[in-house]
Length: 212
Image 1 (tube, rainbow, N blue to C red):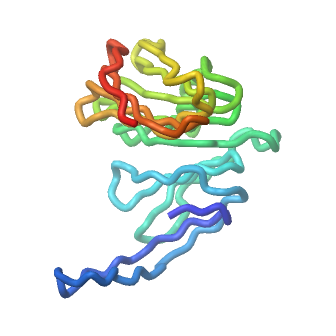
Image 2: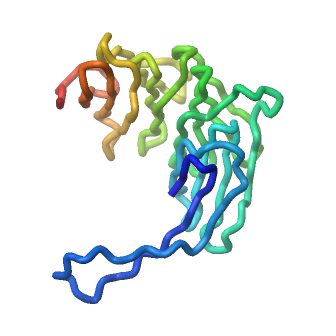
């Protein structure tokens, strides 16, 4: 779990001996990471077992070894810009690339082997990129921003396939998620009139359902 106090904790959840018990097993903190200097904005699992990835409002991201409890990689991006922040993050299924959404409306896709930015996707609102998800086949990435605009990108051609504003009343997209096959994408937002989830065909951009 990641917290606004800048720390990450690894928890042990004991298995209950009584499956019919209504008592919630007590979780125990077995490790803590306190290397970030800002609140944790995203915490993701990595395709490699026992690795987690953290993104922070301090403008950095890290790879965490959950067996040794070591920080195996820590990159502080734009360290000279105190206003730079990562608002969200995701891990590409190839385990090599990471995507971090910034408060400047940019999706930075990192190659963690080379420790360099492979590409910047820049067409979102300057108010911040607030949600990101990669499709399981690795071909597409979905992004959402603080003004309620979502985009689906083709990573092979580095172009936007489709985009929509989920509602003019919405202040932010909080979550975006592909289905297992990358055919559909769910976009969740909240605003002045409540919150709901829009389901789109990811390639065609057609709105299929609105769950509110």
